[in-house]
Image (tube, rainbow, N blue to C red; front, side, top):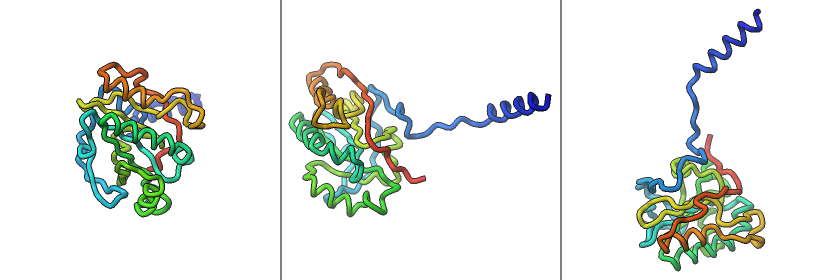
Length: 205
């Protein structure tokens, strides 16, 4: 009887507790959602500053969450370079965002970002996401992870750049290029979402 009474009491207490929703849930943003009206001025690794709106081009904006340290990012740098060039050739703005706030005093510091961007030859803004605010707004979880918005500021694709992030040389499908092609042609993007595979974004506790 005592055991039954204890279980019932525990169930009642748990049921009364408020539910917790984590900001970085993978379903935070869905295809068709609007680009968040974020006006935050972010530091660029080249010494300048910009906003998401300032990085847009006529056909849209591609946002990539990345960092200096994730092995998946490092081995996918050739793919990232291809993606930068592909976006530029289709008049799509692009930014790379570093949200690893918990490592900001270490290998993902602003000074380290400056060196990394220069070493990789980045031709797009590499931005500091202070306190992981943008990652929380977008629901970004991994590096690398991309979000493609069309000229109407609608999310048309999010997820991985290709179908084999673990082996960038062995991919068969470049999801992001297919999404760009469909978007620019005014066609429906398919698939609209894929699973991003990589390192977790290091948020500060």
